[in-house]
Length: 486
Ligand code: GLN
Image (cartoon, rainbow, N blue to C red; front, side, top):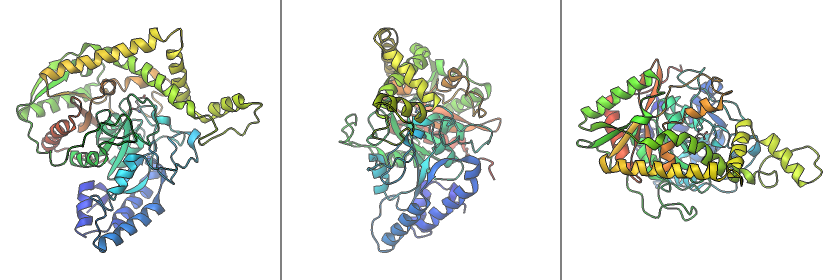
C-alpha cells in the first residue's frame, strides 16, 4: 500500500487499528518529501525531527491505551502564515526570516489536540499576496502535474504538498481564493469556510475582513474531518461565530436529489479557457444526473468584484503590514540609520518583496484623504451589491456553481511581469470572500493533462450542504487525481 497517497481518515484508521504506527506514517511522508522536494519545493521548513519525536510519543501513548486524539499520529502540513510555537513562521517573507512565534494559532492548537503531527510549514506567496506562489522569498513551488507550471497561490505549497503525496492533508488560508485556486490547479479539494467559522487567532493578517483558514485535502471526507477539527468558537478572535460547529463528517450522505443549483453566468462564460469550460459543463451534467436541477443565473455586480477586491484587500493590508517595522518582528536592516524613520524605511525596503510593496502603495493610495471616496468607499458599495446579489440567489437556489479558476495551471514566469493578468486568476473566487460565504473547489477532471476545479458556493454556514454536493459529485466523477511525478 502506498501510504503517501492515502487519505487522512484512512491513515487515522490504520493507526487506530494498529496496522501501522505513527512513526511509520511520518517516516513514509518524510521519505516522500526527501524524494520530491528538490523538484516541487512545497515546504519552507520541514520539521522532521520534531515530527519524529512527536510521532514516537503518540505511539507510546497509544500502546499504553491512552486516547491521543481522533487523528492521533496523522501527519499534516501547515501553511507558513499560521503561528507555530517554537517553530519558524515566515509568511514567505524575508521580513519574518528567523521569526519564531511564542504561541500557536488556535487552529494549530486544535489540530495538535486532535493528535496530528506537523510535517512542516508550507510555502506561500509572501504574506499570502499572489496567485502562483512565485512571490515567496524562499523560491517558488512547482506544480506536481507539470514542473514548468505554477501550483496556484497563495497556498501553493499546501496544495502541491497534498497533490504530490508529501502530506495527506494541509491547512491553508483564503483571502481572495488562496485555498480554492491552488486546490483547483493541483487537483485537490479546498474549502474556504464562512467568515467567522474558523478562528484567525495566530493567522498573520492580510485583509482582516476577508481572511479565513480552511482545509486542503485529497477527498471531501477528509475535508469534512479537518473542518470539524478547526471550526468553532474561539474567544481569542472577536470575529469568531459563537455557535458550536456541527459534525460535518456524519452529514456526508450524498443525498442531493431535488436540490437546485445556479450556474453563475458572470463566472462561467467570458474569459474561461475552453478546456476548463468543457470539464465544467460535463460536471454540471453529472450534477443533473444526481437529480439536481441546474439553471443559469445572472449576478450582475460580480463584474466589479475583482476591482473592488483589489482596493479593499490592499487597503486592509497596508494597515495590517504597518507592524513590520524592524522593531518587534523578524528582519531589521544592517545599514546604519540616522534616526528611527530611516531604520523603518530601510527595513521595509529590503524586507518586503515587490508585490507586497505594490499592495501597500495601492492600499495607502486608496485610503488617502483625496481618494478615499473615489476608491475605497466605492469598492465597499460594490461589496454590498455583491452581498445582495448572493442574497437574492439564495431565494431560488441551494448552491451556486462555477469554475474555480478561469485557466488550468500556467507556466512559471508567465504572469509575473503583468500584475493585472495575475489578478484575473482570482475572478471566480473573489466574490465569495467579499460576501463572507463558504465555497469549495472539487477536482473535476483534467484538461490537456492539467487539473480543473469545480467551485460550489452556498449561503453563510452551509458548509455541510456544499460538502455534501461535492461528496455526491466526487462519487460519480470517480476522479482520483495522482500527478505523473514518478
Ligand atoms: N490572489 C489573491 C491576492 O493576491 C488572493 C490571495 C489570498 O487569498 N490570500 O490577493
